[in-house]
Image (tube, helix red, strand yellow):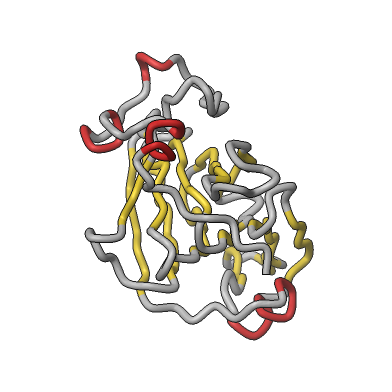
Length: 194
């Protein structure tokens, strides 16, 4: 992963990375993940425990998902085919950016990735049919610690580029609590400034 650009988002613990691509008459080559270079750029180790891949139709929303802390789950998200609007939501109670979000387009043109630290919420909407999203995680899936908040929560005002009634969500995501409801139920992780 030779990083051309890395930028910390306004939300602490989220970074956007643009790897260098090498194109010729055969196509394109890039390293979209290297643990050593990611650690050098972000100042933190990322030990991969699981790799996930989803394929989505246009207007499908997945998230806002996060894992209870501890253990938490960091993610490196990449879109090898199609395009998504990827959204990171600060769900950490006590964070100076609590309830705020950052959105970035991930696609098979610019080939950016998003690195998301433990305790942050993650969601995306597919902008094209047959969109693939691949993400590496720092912990394996554990339904006992998986959490979510509604991607349709009006208080979050996430920037979905489609009308709400056009979005396709799982029943689980559609029925997820609002951020305020999740906080009242004690489901949100605390902010750890260390």
